[in-house]
Each structure stands twice: as C-alpha cells, then as structure tokens.
Length: 544
Image (tube, rainbow, N blue to C red):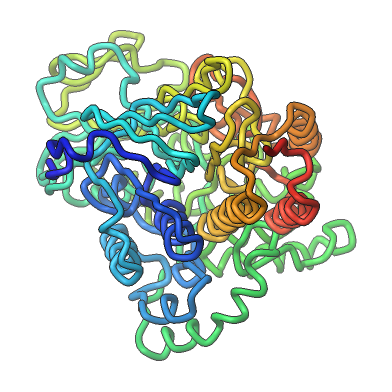
C-alpha cells in the first residue's frame, strides 16, 4: 500500500479538481487541467499503476482491436512519434507500457494517488463544491469532479450462487491476477464467449489440459490480420499523423475508415459481394464499422451481410453441431459487439476442447468441485474463468455513492432511467463531468482514444470558460437533458441495434433500464453538436 494511505497530513485536502481514473481519458484530463489550465488537481486510481482498462484486463490474449496507430493521443506530435508499435494490434503488455510512457513523458505520476478507491462524492450546495471520500478515510474538497472511470470497468464478478465455495481458482477476466496464473495441464472452464472470452479461449486452448467453454449467445467474428511492424511500417504510419488529426475526429466511428462504398441498393449483387470479400480480407473491424450503413437499419441488408459472415464461419467450423452453437441466427451482424479473432473457431476442433451450450440448460451454480447445470450435469475444474462481461457505461459510477443536489443519488436515478446530457454531465449534479458515460459515442461505438480525447477537451474548455468568466458552477438544465435523451433515443430506435439483447442495451444486467448506452448518430456528428453547444456559451447549461 502506498505511503499516502497513512499520511495524516493528506487526510483533508482542498483541490480545484479531482479526476477519477488514470486510463486513456484520466491521464489526458489530468494533463489538460494541470498543465494547460494551471489547476490544482489530483487523479485517483484503485490500481497500483496507470492504464485503466489496460491495467486490469491482463488476461491471456488481451489486445487491441483498434489499429495501434489510431488508438493514440493526437494532441502532441512529439508524444505520438516518440512511441513505436511492434504490430498492428498489439497485446496488453505493450499497451500498458505505452500508457506508462505517456505518464512519464507528461510527468503525471506526482499528481496521481494509486491504490485508492473513491467511495463517495457528495455535492455541498452551500459551498458549491464536492466532498470526496476515499477508502482510507481521506476527505477531499474540490470544485470540479471529473469521472474517467471507463465504460467497461465494472466487472460482473458475482454471477452464480456458490462461487465462494469453489476449491480451485476462480477469476474474472476484468480482474486477472497480476502474477502469472499457471494454466498448463489444468482442467479449465471458461464461461462466456464475447470479445474477451474469444481472446482467452483461442489463447489458452493449446496449453491447458482440458478446456470446456460454456456458450449462451453465439457471436459473429472477423479474422484478425495482425502483421508485425518494422522500421519501414512504423515510419509509414507516423508520416500520417497530420492526416489522422484531420480525419479521425470527424469519421462515423473515430476510425481511419468510413462508409465510402456507396449505397447498397445502387450496387449489383456481384459488386456488393466484391466489396464484402475485399473488406473481409483486410482483417479489421472495417466490415462492421465502414462497409454498408444500411445493415444497421434495413432487415434485408442485415440478413445478407449476416449470411455472408455465417458462410465464412461454416467453412471453418465444418461440424454441424459446432455451427449450431457458435453461429448466430437470431440477430444481425453488427448489432452486437463484433470481435476480431485468430484461430478461435479452430480451437473447438482440438481434442482437449469441449463446447457446452447453456442457452436452454443454464449454469445453475458453482460447486466446490466445479459447476452444475440446470439439468444436474456437473463439471469438475481446477480453474474457472468468468468472461461474463461488465455493467457497461453506468456501472463504474453507480458503484460510487454519488449524491447531487437535494441529496439525490445517481445510483438510484440510473436504476430507474439512465439519462445524461451528451454523456458529459447529468442534471442535478453540478460541476460533475463524465467521460465514457452513457449516451455518448465513447460508451461503445467509437475508437476510444478519438472519443475520449474529444470529451476531455470539451470538459477542459468548459472549465476554462467558467474561470475566464468568473463563474463557479455549471449544470445542464432538465430541458436540455430531456432534449438530448429524446434525440439519442430517436436515432437509436431507428436502428436494428435496439431490437436485440446485448450489453449495448444493458440486457446483460438484471433490472438495468433498457436503453442503447452509446450514441449511434456518429462520432463526427456528436463532436459537431458538442462544439455548437460550447460556441453558444454552453447553451442549455445553467451557470452561476
């Protein structure tokens, strides 16, 4: 535990701003407020080091599925060009090293408190400031609270009855132990086959003694092409820095590619197929994020593209039973998160790997020896890996006791209806800013660095505006928030995404209000709307 835990001189502290989290958003937010606005600011993180998502998710096979050269900070050409990636989609250890490089280059560590969990944040209407409390009893008084807690950082760890009775090792992918977990020769069960589960399964299948994979919802996949980078490739992508600065913030998903293949209905069947084949061979998320926008709106287009992917999967799986369990048929391609994979389907052909469908025969409980299904079938394991996902978007904030005006509770409000104003502030919580929160593209539908940088910059500009104009408080009006939620819902409801059950809709958390967590109107459109609000003197926000 770090020394700041016992330093009584720090137990009561007054700051201009508190930043929660030191991932991609938190590091940049600390830099912007401290170095560019000159605020007295500290960042807090429950982890022992920087990285956020890339600190916690150190499970076998964890890696980017955004190209490394665009999953980058673009505010500094020197910072961008000072780091060289070894491959197109690097693994977690390299990503964590990069974020440590950023923290060191910007000299951020001196203003970060590690191994510290924020337990509560209460707004004081009399002082117009926030009182922040940590798990060690520290109390911080601050004018601004900026949450950079991540959109996938509240793991669903307590999923099944009896987990505490298991005699072996039980781990959630989002809280993988920092030391090596020896899986060689072990009897391993993996629960879940989303993007994370797929990365784990394909990585460990060759080293474990036996692997049983428990699958409820099949997933569409795209094969990843991940070439290594030498000096020539690194020089080529670094030469595109200015191009990325100009294009990424204005594309539909914050990636380098956009929907440029024309209208689906204007092409012949042969032309469409040629486009799909070309993009498929590229081995990236382009098929999902930049092939034909119509697949998100039109059932017939969705079905044709979905069947294209199914055919690709059937050709690799061959076994009809595997195809039945692993290939989706009841929802369209792209309406769930689409994972990239490397020989994932082939893992099921290995003699030590068994696929267990739990769609109609769910897991009933964890037992001391392993797990038990509803029909009484039991499986014994040395290690159980829960790839059971997260309480996405809202979970990281509702796990903190956040109280706004009139004692209102964010957890209580969001348990009834998840509402924000552009995913940047919440009515009733003055001077609290959010990144990666619901109803912004950064919740799920974006190259994360593109969207998180934009949000950090908007927040920093807003705080700068307040200080320049000698204002102390800003909060969205109820009318502005209602208008944003209505706009968000109108766009969302026109898509097929809202017709499916996925974590995008909060469907993976029992009792969670149903709403598309991420703004689906486009990254460039969202940025433009945020800029318009700022240019109009933060129209729709009450200031004093």
